[in-house]
Length: 232
Ligand code: G3P
Figure 1 (cartoon, protein in one colour):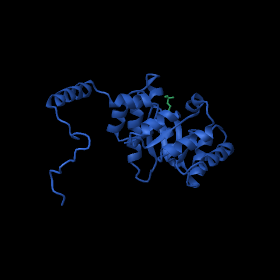
Figure 2 (tube, helix red, strand yellow; figure 1 turned 90 degrees about the vertical axis):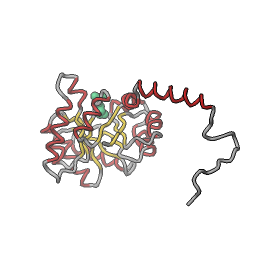
Figure 3 (cartoon, helix red, strand yellow; figure 1 turned 60 degrees about the vertical axis):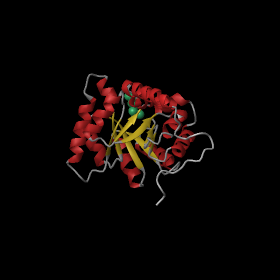
Figure 4 (cartoon, helix red, strand yellow; figure 1 turned 120 degrees about the vertical axis):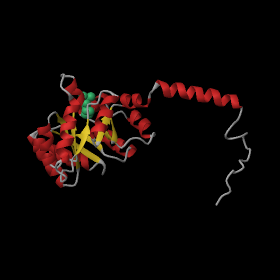
């Protein structure tokens, strides 16, 4: 499963990209508003940091303006993925933009029927919002399961399920078990994924026990390392 980070915060993106674990980035107007920076410059900077798909959402809601905005965003960098809402005009823009060869992420998906429409519109990604469904006591992960199962019936569907509105690590585990293609993850949830008390406790004990050996793998500073295995 591909890991995208769901943020427009450059410092967070730089730090997480340095782990080598990031496959892409998603932003949305709310995340961009939080940064306060110039949107086009921000997307250009993110595309420099992460070579994978970088979602940049149109602001308009009518087809003509969404198409113009999408084409403008696509000119920023080859890895720009234009994000459009799952509306009739949004899917019309999706079809036109994918026809241009631009990647499109159809967002604000909340039903399997909507996901079918996104696939028919040729979306590169569809973003079902699991957290916002959970917030309404509706099983967001059940929607992911439905969409993955439906898409699997039709090998011609190239649209990837991009699990969005992730709230905790178990959303990721469930998404991976269902075979979702991508998850876009808030930075805090990515950090939670690393954590386990037994890992921390085990490492502490390894460090303590190694210290009792009095040895150093790198030897003294400047000491030549004698190769144990003769080079072939
Ligand atoms: O960016 C799309 C989606 O991941 C936002 O989810 O519910 O955290 O605003 P949410």
